[in-house]
Amino acid sequence: MTDPAESSGSPEAADRDVPVGEVGVVTGPRGGRATAVRVLALLVVLVFAGLSLRSAWSDVRADLARLTVPAITASALAFGAAIACQFAAWFGLLHRHARANTFGMHDGAVVYSVGQLGKYVPGAVWPAVIQSDMGARRRMPWRVMLGAYTQMLVLSVTTGAVLGLGTLLGPAPPWVHAVAVAGAVAGVVFGWAAVHPDALHRWMDRVLQRLTAAGLPERLDGRAAARAAALSIVAWLLIGAHAVAIVRPLGVTAGDALFVGASFVFAWVCGIVAVPFPAGLGIREAVLIVTVGQLTDRPTAVALALASRLIQVVVDLGLAGVLGALGPVLRRRLPATDPS
Image (cartoon, rainbow, N blue to C red; front, side):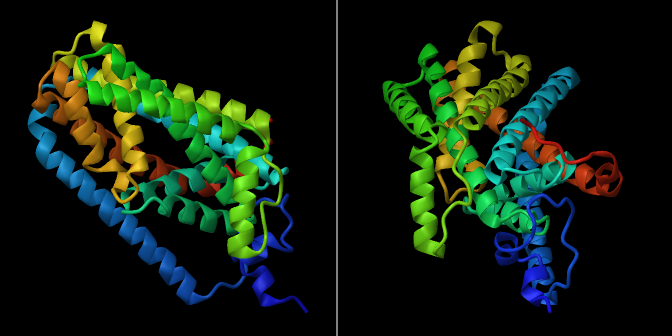
């Protein structure tokens, strides 16, 4: 007889006997308690995302009157393209961790986009928790999901920290320049560790063995990490373009675009490493005030932060909703593919 735990879609089952190469969502018997927890988690995510949207809207609606439709459209498209690059990087790492086609492009996009909504909840663990749970229900071992998420997070932060050196091009205070340089140096060191197949793997394997008595199922792939790092750089450049598109109608010239874009990336990275703050709320705004605010004025810097957050929430929720709604159709049309 089959142990019910092995067909329940739990992370433990995903780590043991469920074949990694099988595509699809696990549909075995699941407890009502687990379903209730997922529904409650989804409601919490939506509430926090809605509060972020409401706060941004009430503060930025006056400034939105100064923005043009082409500027908002260009900003939203740039942010959407950045998400696509980040997803491609994560998806490539995920399949290299798993060494097999565990689920297809659409399932991966759903897991990634829904997981990203967890960043609106206080604490940095929720995207990893959501992705690991959704991956387990699609027969992906949770250790593989956690490994790909952690490696992608390190690559994203380190590449963003290096690009934050662009703050040296503008009138930010000397202490901001010093922090940017220190961050870039740390980014190079930790970025190398994330790309090197032994360094990050050894650390993650040791942590998992201590916490769960089992390490990573596969050794990390340096080539896949290098590709993910390159895609992360492209994603950050697009996020910088997203910010520049917002501030152009607010009086920022093309000559200051590099400084504004780099300052926005620097502010975003600061928000990521400030773990208790959901989606860097408050941290990103404060950093933009001491960087972009020195170029323009404080209201323009705040307008940039709030308009950007408004666009991000709309795009994040829209992508997750559309991908989820189109799931049954796209799952039949998009076969599992190996991104290598």
